[in-house]
Image (cartoon, rainbow, N blue to C red; front, side):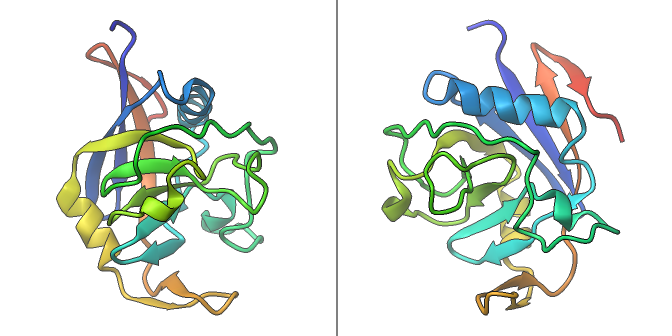
Length: 176
């Protein structure tokens, strides 16, 4: 298939590369690619880390100097859920959302373990193709209780420095 894209997530702990499942979640993939190209994710942080489950990022309130509570922000729009048959296994990227199925915007999570209870309830839209050791490093970051009491707030900042979209061997999007 031409027009295949991958995303290179450059973090403070290393790089991870994601491939997308456009055929299963076309609008979700396009939303992520658009936000990445606009630099929306640059300078955000992984604000929710649950070893053995997932790492979550993509909240604009996680940028240094932002006032909102990390985990409560978005891009100013939401997208319709695209639930599909892709299982939530280690390395799968999926959209985070509130209780409402169509409430995803920019926040995403990467599974650190298998999470079958999320299948067909969250939009899985891609998979880690390299950087598994970085996923482990991030998942092993020490955590403390968050504002909701869940022990998932990183004790040290894990920054998502940039997301670069690579198309057919060439790069496009945000530079850092």
